[in-house]
Image 1 (tube, rainbow, N blue to C red):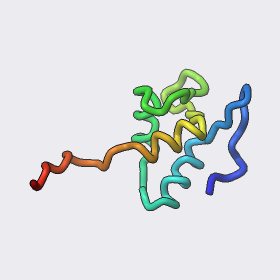
Image 2 (image 1 turned 60 degrees about the vertical axis):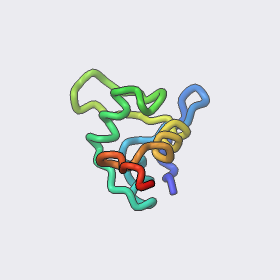
Image 3 (image 1 turned 135 degrees about the horizontal axis):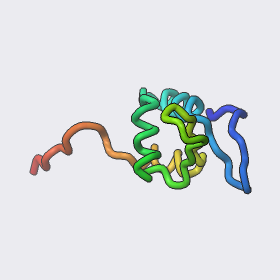
Image 4 (image 1 turned 180 degrees about the vertical axis):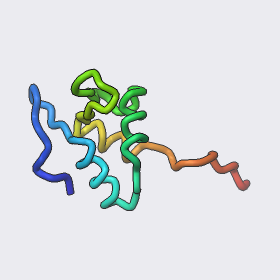
Length: 84
């Protein structure tokens, strides 16, 4: 469950990093904040915004984009070869 701490800006609901990590944890994935931040920075989480210019500034993640990214990301590690 995503907490009520999400905020809405211009009609888009955003999650704080902590809420995104709780969401992942509830689904059995222990994602690190640095991994999610890297994906946001690389554009893999569409519409993610960094608030402020410092290295430690927080990220806001659009709820819909985060859930879509979370559900469609591939398993970590090398892809398995076909066993045909």
